[in-house]
Image 1 (spheres, rainbow, N blue to C red):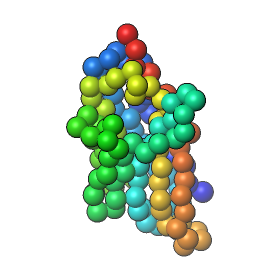
Image 2: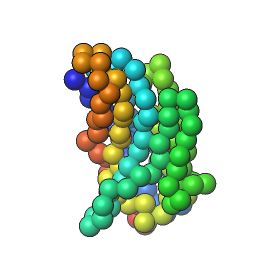
Image 3: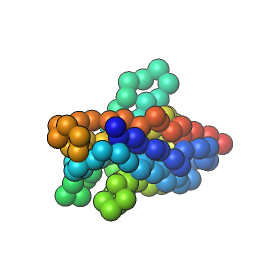
Image 4: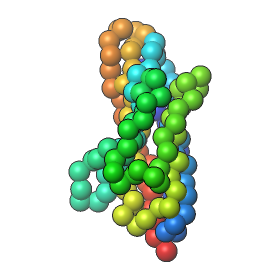
Length: 121
């Protein structure tokens, strides 16, 4: 079993900043890519940013220049620093993890429960 615990969401004014955190725990033998996705009301879930085990990052066009993804391997934690937030960034943000299970030795994927980010004045 692997659990992802997300935190850091909330209400912020346009132009403000937030930092999301996602901590993984459980039967993890090896971490692969970690990432953040979001789903706005009435829309499909979309990629925000990913970071590989080698710290190679990938961003959606909407996130480039404003968001920064990082990871702290020793703590199995991934962060999303969000600056210059806009109302259209309002969504539930989900953490995603690809990992090798220490129980089954299979490569698996797990999602966090989501944290709500609301950008509004």
